[in-house]
Length: 137
Image (cartoon, rainbow, N blue to C red; front, top):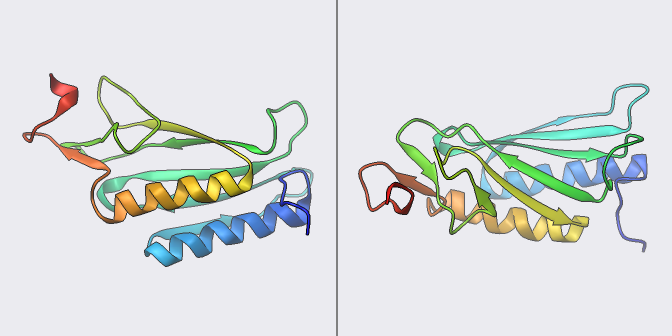
């Protein structure tokens, strides 16, 4: 069976639904936004504890980046909380409320999401202000 790719409409939907299934497995809220007519993009919006949010885009729009490279922009943590740079690819060093990860290919995306989802579920992904916070040093 060929690898799933965001280049194919049926694959975009299948991948989005697999991300929702993965979120359900970790008990996170997820919403599928199907493609609108004339677009080549489906998305999954996710919400996590402590206000953390993420949108996963399956985008094959012309002129964009490689459709099978997924740039994940984690954002929205509540005040008094930062994302732990030990658990995310690149955390904003000033306020710690945003992080960026990159995955190349759907299998890599799934692996990365499993790692991040586990760290969020188990509360390792966060640093609370007032604790030993490496970002304040």
